[in-house]
Image 1 (cartoon, rainbow, N blue to C red):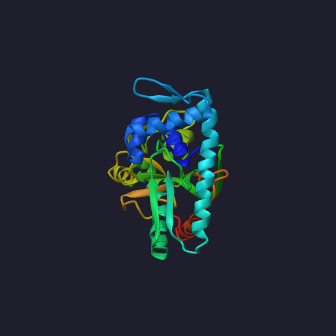
Image 2: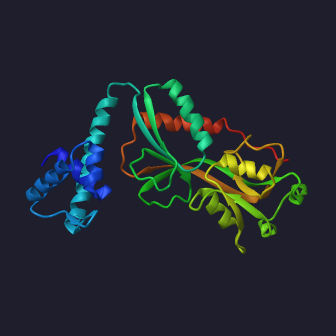
Image 3: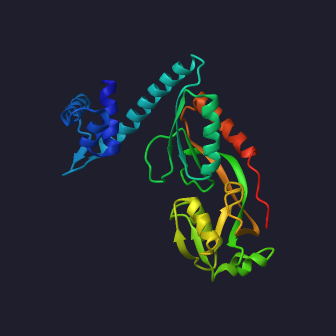
Length: 288
């Protein structure tokens, strides 16, 4: 059994397409199909169900995939350990950032200045597939296969335009917002989930959704609606036309999630420390 066979097999299983697998490895499609056929002959069974434009693992394939994936992971871990024995901080860190982009970006900037030989692969899409060293998300991250460490806990406040009658109130109960227009991020995002969770007892009138926090803040400043937001993560980002109001003790915790059993590289450990430093330097907003 060859290492290349395992790599082709695992990638084909995940991509469910020989052509895309061939494109990933920069080889003809025939190389992929012939290599996997040799693997099947060696194992004495077929591993895939073949459809018109798609392949899927059959029962035997699913059983073998788990072991093959673990084997490749162990080999990659061994390569990383060997590279780190040279005492240099270099290589790649893969991060999925679902919350606190600003804090993470600051940490990356500082980290690159200190360790210029480290490169980053950064994704923001919840639908992104792939193996990440770290995932920055909220405490409701649903995957039980991940260990989580709290990075930051912050209050959730309400942002309103200064001419909104709510701006003259000291505190606001969420139930008083049922007639307001809400501005938030897309379905599945942390802030969308928090908005719907807080509006218990009524369905929030979500007038605007944007995947860019800049435009959420801009629309609030234009008086197009109100928005829940994390006080420290969005510190200093609103215009003077926006005021912030307490809605009681409502908090969000941002966590660092990593897959259970996955080797944590030295560079990833150092980056976690840099993240903690960036959080310590982030100050809360002042109420207006």
